[in-house]
Structures are given as C-alpha cells and as structure tokens.
Length: 420
Image (cartoon, rainbow, N blue to C red; front, side, top):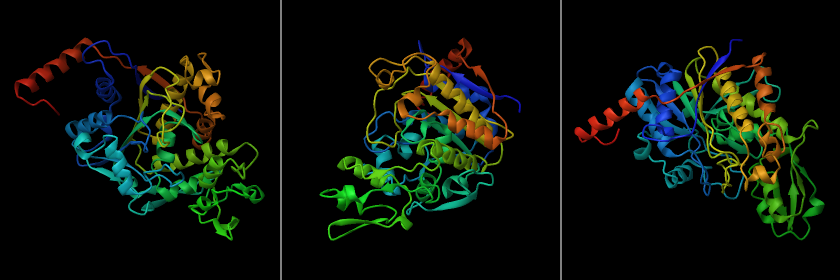
C-alpha cells in the first residue's frame, strides 16, 4: 500500500491570517478537498455538537468556514449533521431530534450560525437508518447507518479529537463508527448485537432506593416486582444504563461485559472500527474528507455532561482523503493524530499529571482511559489486510496567503460585504 498523505497545520497564530480558521481553509486547499465534491452534491458535514453540559466541543465557527468553502468553491449543497445518541445516561439531551436540536442551538449551532440546514440524520425514532453489511467483521456482521448520512453524495467529517470512556480515543473512527449510526445502531455496536451482556448480581440490590431507575432500562431488561428488581437476561444487551445507575447507587451489582478476557474496552474499540469501515465505504472512494482538530484534548468525549481541562497543548489540524479507499484515509488521519497526542508533553494540573503520563512519548489515552487506543488502529490494519502508513506534510500560512486574505477583506469592506 502506498503511503496515505496526511496534511497538518499547527495551532500557533502570531498575526493576522494565521489562526485556525485560516489554516482550515489553507489545509482544505492543499489537501485538494475541492475535488471530493461535485456541483450539486448533497454534502454531509459530520460534527459532534456536544451533549448538555459539555463545553469544549468543536466550535460552530469551524463548521461555518467549511460550509462556506463547500458553497463557494464546489457549488455543493452542505448540511450539518449528527445522529441521535443512545439514551444511555440520565444527563443525555440528544436522544431525540427535538432535544438534539435544542442542545445544539444552546451550543451555538443554528442554521444561521453555520449557514446550512442542521439535520438529525436518524429521524424522530432514532431508527431511521440503513442496514449495512460488514463482510469481514470480527464482532459485527452489520451496522445501522443513519439514513440522512448514508444517502448523501459526499461527506466531510470534522472531528474533535479527545478521550472516550469506552472508545478510548475519540477520533475519525469514533466519529463514523458511533457518530454516523442511528440511536439504535449505537446500542447495536455497544452490545455487539445484544451478544455482550452485563453481569448482574441482584443479591447486592437490597435496600437500594435507586431500583426504580433500573426499571428505565432502554433494553427493557429490568422491571420491579414487589419492590425488588427482576432481570430478564434474554432482553439484555449492554447499554450502559444499569451500570451508570448502579455506580451512582454505589452497590456494585453491575459488571460491564468482558467477552474474551481482554476487557470490554478492547472489544468495543474493534466493533466501533468495524462500524466505521462500513460507514466510510458506504460512500464512493474519494468522496469523504477527514479533518481532525487535535485541540482542547480532554479526557472524555463531548457526549458527557462536563469537560475537564485539556491534558496536552493544542496540536493543530490533521486532514486526509483517499481516491482509492476512504477507510485508508480515516485510519491514516487517526494514526497521525494519535502520534501527535503521544509526542506532546502532558500539562501539569491535568489528567496527564494525575495518571503520571506527562512525558513526551507516553501513550496518554492508555494511561488515562485504561486501554490501548492502538487497538482500534491495529484492527483497522487487519480489516485493510495491511498496515496503513502515512506521509505527513506540514502546511504553513505564507506571506502570499496573508496578502491575498487582506485584499479580500479590504474588498469586502469597500463593497460593504462584511461576512461570507
């Protein structure tokens, strides 16, 4: 396999025209993303808009810049999109399209702010999806891709790289493998088609005033009879709900699945990667562009209800595409992003100090999350049947870029066109 090109622009900005928004446009040019989109294409701009309470999600201004590039440069028809989350937690405010749109608006994502429609791609029941086969999956034989995404002609993924409680690293693979599937598709990946089940010890449930909340299990596997919980294992498929409730209660009655002795996280990373491959290959080769923002790298995903401080300095933007196989570019951009995270020194006063991984070269997500993020990338290599290698090309703003931008701003001011 030839090396996949990955383009990188750093986060430093010392003057006009050198900020991350300007570098987003520059990296778009250098990476040739105009060529991914044909005039009239419906273009899904996939982004995670954050659940209620989180504060370091990718800001709407980045999405707006990409939408404007699609409109003005390619004559594509962009829409900003995400799918409903699995309703696995008490804080979740994105499990239905109406809640999702309200949360997105509270975070600054509106049609006016991003200059495009905002589409919750899996519909009112979080099950408007298309079943997509995974022919060589180790864990999954299919996944459920949100209809609004799979029916698009092209896709640009804007990924905020960060940690994830179960995916370990939330990169492009997570953005596709979990973010692009429907709400019910997320349950499917998390439980491996209900084959992975939590272990329940009902003897620990005595005198627990949280029992009534267990009966809200999204799988319908719990009910309460005579003040006691009853567990129906046939309906069970690990959906996080019982584990989170029991954690709050402090009873220790729920143990997360451990399918093969390697732990849940290792297996989930592989299933997530298989789902991501199905999404990436659901588009024609060369119709997906991957943009990873390695900024505000916090320990947990934007799907939780809070955000810790970043544990490394911002590393910039990484972008890739492939005319042969979208999945190659997805794996390459995540490899480059992960290596950037590991090469960076950890920040004092952050999770990197708590977990003793401050030094450059440490596998920070493994220390912080408790599992090796390279598992998903090694699994990507196995699905591709060869290791993905990438060639990193650094992208910098030139004097000519700054002059061109200044003239554009001056011309807009002369014509009283101050936005767009």
